[in-house]
Amino acid sequence: ALPGRSLADLQRLLALDIAPTQIDFAQRLRDAATDGRLAVLAEVKRASPSKGDICADAIAAEHGLAYARAGAAAISVLTEPTWFKGSIDDLRDVRQAVSHIEPRPAVLRKEFVFEKYQIAEARLAGADSVLLIVKMLSRAQLHALLEYSRELRMEPLVEVNDADEMRAALDAGATVIGVNNRDLRTFAVDMDTTRDLAAQVPKEVVLVALSGIVQPSDAAIYAGASVGGVLVGEALMRATDKAAFVQGLQTALQN
Image (tube, rainbow, N blue to C red; front, side):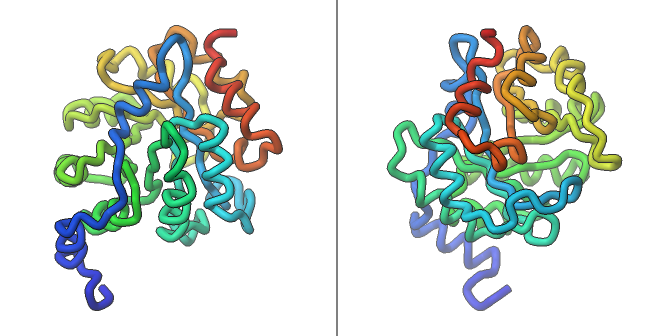
């Protein structure tokens, strides 16, 4: 690590209380998912392994602010540089750009998180939550990272793709669980994945559908499935009218 940027250094910075103010990620989603509406997690994503470049020259803060003004409950920011062409600076910029929006959307660090350093770094940059992918973590890692995230008052979004991973997430005590409709091994999308796993989820857990939504009406598949939110990246990055897209997602279960 650079001088002054080890994990111990980051923890000392956090102890100085210099990180941007935070909000309760889970509660922000619950507040948005009322009266039959879906909480929208809008993603800032320049590229992906499955699609290549999506919007390679995107200014993260511009997209984040557009999502916030459209009423997104949360903004997911890809910070992984190789496959997604993101950086921690993107998250910092988005957090600053939406700071004056009321109610402010939660900001999520979307990254392959394997260590506490990434969580501390996210908090200092202004994140309210981080992504933990069950498929990529041992059970011990999952428990340790979830616990550390909570020490920083950041309820993580725990990503699963099948019934075994869902059990692992629930056993770890996750309260916000995202079901990835895309199989990370094959990149194939099955929109029924979230519906199929929803029955395992207690009602107090916020369930979010990840991947596969191309247009707002696609979210209607989750009517009656206890899904509280949807995360949309590529389609929103490409959308010319982001406000209409977000509002269409919010009301997709009511149509």
